[in-house]
Image (cartoon, rainbow, N blue to C red):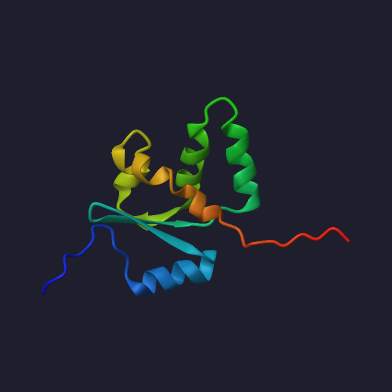
Amino acid sequence: METEELIGKLSEKEIEAFKAKHGEVFEFEVDGKVCYLKKPDRKLLGAAMKMSKDDPMKFNETIMNNCFLGGYDGFKDVNGDLFLDIESEFAKLLERRAVTVKKL
């Protein structure tokens, strides 16, 4: 059975190069198209939060514009359906480890 190639799919070598440079890399896939984003750092998160005070969508636009590494460029169109499809998943870029807190 032949598998269909995803539009924007990067090679393993390209993905490994991004991982070496940026750490974690995330692949988003919608309708046979993919894009890759890096995890935002603290400085970028602060800037995105500041920009979102007047327009909540600016947070997601800032993340996309600064974390996009490659893949299908159609995801970068912040007025397009592909951007809207994945922006709700950006929280996965920020997932943290479980923390145990004890009052002593």
